[in-house]
Length: 175
Image 1 (cartoon, rainbow, N blue to C red):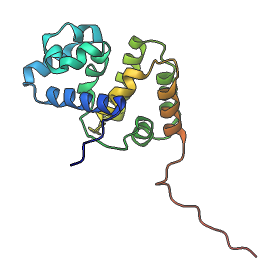
Image 2: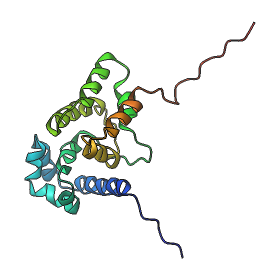
Image 3: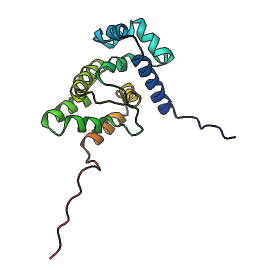
Image 4: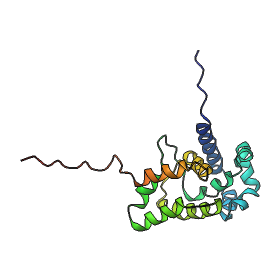
């Protein structure tokens, strides 16, 4: 009988964040409305509903309320290969306005600025109800301001890098 391999802390965090989102999705409409009226993560963090859906993760991750604040802006869709940079590139396109918004998002210096920029960019990107993987995106939001800057670099790479679903270049026959 084989034992399941222990998951990495990052994978476990994604799973825990998806579970928080699943509990959010099961809330009665009135409770969701209470959370939707909150304008800041601090307002979210003083609501009993937040502590109900956040459970033990809310106690371990003090910035979880910053993720929950964004839940109303996009539906959940679990994906093993979700990339927020690719998602924004696909949903916002290659316009100068999209690039400017994205650069401003990456330049966020603190949680409040990140919340403000994320709310604006998610409203645009998810206007047609495009889903995101709240496990992967939530983890990125929690780790966005880490000293390493890995999340910012990965988002930028995925936003600006050419994707494999672009049409292949046509070959020119040699004379």
